[in-house]
Length: 300
Image (cartoon, rainbow, N blue to C red):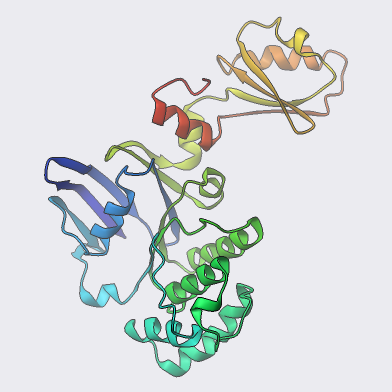
């Protein structure tokens, strides 16, 4: 287990991370979210020992992270760091050997990874000839080819289309199943919901949400309904506690003042029997994120 305890970082008068506490468990994924400048990248840099915390500790199985431990860390930075003049093979083998992997093993694994991630191009192609998406996949290969025990991903899906995003997610989930500790940041809340077991949200360096993802969502109450029904908006709005109705796909998205209002909505739409779709859920992570960022109601 990796533990961040009372972690604090100041840059002059600016408090970038304020008394953070977090645990990363083997085989778990933690989503670290927050606006730009919230402290996410600073946290990663402290975990990687690029910068030192002002206060607090980072430990791995009860001891400070050693140089040997660092061999088992895979890091994908937000600012992509591939050498444009090298070939794909030269680039990946360079990083693999830095982490103690034998060149012959890395060569063999690279071919397999190119196929798994559907990289368009050959290992002999120079990095500068790749599209942005394929270069990003090559950087992920360089990050995970050594099967790291700790995987730190800073905005891994930026600029990827849905198909390639899913390919990358599949490999992250495979590493999770193999017992890796994984932490990643993303502004794609849908992706965070799909991948994360636990969540930590920062606002101006302070932790404002922390815990198991579903527990956090449920703590906001089941104040959202997705409905497919012939009942009109006018009929629905006769129910006190309905705050908003918006068209969504084939149905409507309804926001409630309180989860108990859902019973009245269901009674209305089910009075004639069959209801095509009625799903009452907590707010999405995207809505919770906006609520915490703005300081307003989740229903605003």
